[in-house]
Each structure stands twice: as structure tokens, then as C-alpha cells.
Image: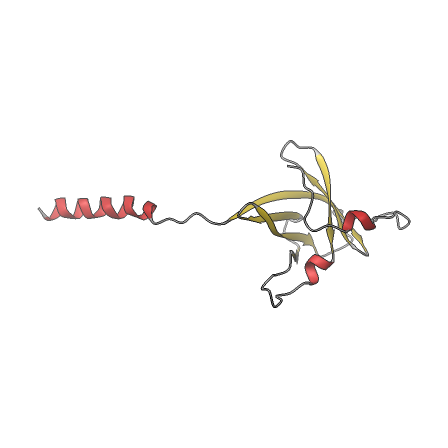
Length: 137
């Protein structure tokens, strides 16, 4: 009798946990970076899409300098500097289907092959004047 009760209790426990699992309001996607170009207005990122195409994104510096404000909004971007072999890559987060923020994982050595240099005469103001990234997947 005790074994049967214990078995039923274990089954309720195993299957019951799934009933209480909550869906996250966040969705994240990882993109692998081929090249990072620093600019006075932000970073131009060259990355690989899921179809193995090359795409570009412009990430303004202002996204990294914002902090918690009176309305509770946090910065749209974070940078993690390091030497991990998996660097560089970025993770983009959406909250309830809308862009929330992104994290860049970049090599701290700017002489690394993943870093490049932009033409200083190229006008990129419009490309960095954005509220959310224009990404291809």
C-alpha cells in the first residue's frame, strides 16, 4: 500500500511541476559577430545570419550609457569585455515581442582580428540614429 501511495505521489509531483511552469516574457537570440567597427557614434557590427549570410547592424553608444531612470527604463545595451574563445557575439532580447535590449560580448584586445576600422569620412549619423536594431536573421 505504501509503495502504491508513494508511486502516485511521485507521479503527481513529476507531472504537476509542468503545470506550474511559467512562460518567460523574454525571448533571446544569439548572433555571431564577424567584425566590430568602433565609431564615435557607436559600433558597426558585421554578423552572420542563420542562413550563413553576412549582415550589418548599427548600435549607438547612447544605448550603453543610459541607466535606470525615473520611469524605470534600463539601458538598451550592455558590453561584456573578455578573452573567451567564443567572443565576439551578441544576444538580443525581446520582451513580450518588442525589442528590449542587447548584450555585446567583445574581445577586450582591440588589436584582435575581430576589430576593424571605418572610413572616417563616411557619414553614418542616420544609421546610428535608431531606437532599435534593424537585424536580419
